[in-house]
Length: 305
Figure (tube, rainbow, N blue to C red):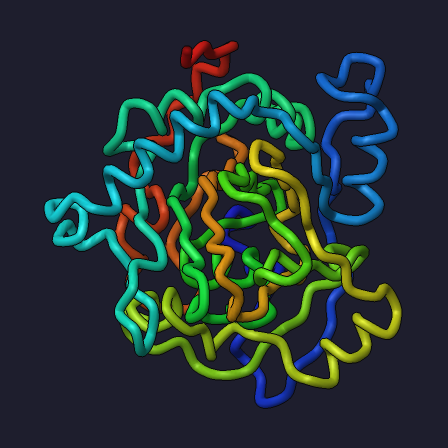
């Protein structure tokens, strides 16, 4: 077998779930004196598998981003683009994908040194955007998203070889403990949970609304939570949450009046570009997982006002 095609993180192949220890670094550079943020923040990311940086974007920038987000949300062409995912039940817009390709403002945000520069340091090389989207969790009826490791899906269904990717969520609304914020299990990124269940054809059509294949078993989740506890990523609008590709995370439903929204970018190392999926199915569409353009991002300071 081609060593570049070796399945180092097999999942959905056995009748029972199992654990595997991580084979890859969490932070790919050790020259912390040259990091774009404080060394203790990089160390916290390495230890916990996530990091919240409050107020990385100003209130004025957030207002501009939200204005564009609301415009897209109300655009019939966006709703009919095939890149929009709706809530199960209510039909409310849940996510709009591929925003870094389709929207000039959101493309610039993807290259912003404040966020992409941090990702580039942690991942130790040039980056491309594996996935981007804007997310909504409306008040009163925003649905939960069950526990999962993104890497399990990106590896199995997209063909991402190694754990050399991370997610960046730019909060456009205040995230409080009561309105369904992101929950994470700190330290879970060190353990890979091999899930059960065969991947259906076109699984993304269901999983992006409610994921049921590629989710960990109750016993593994209980063990992780008993070992490490559960944190919530809260903060004011303008804050940014970075989390490792293998950090176990999910969110509760939102039954409060306080809606949530964010811009979401997945950065992957160019050297870790996706290959054929490891599940034996056809790849997910490009708007969900980039498969053609692995050119390094032109990361630079951005001014929006």
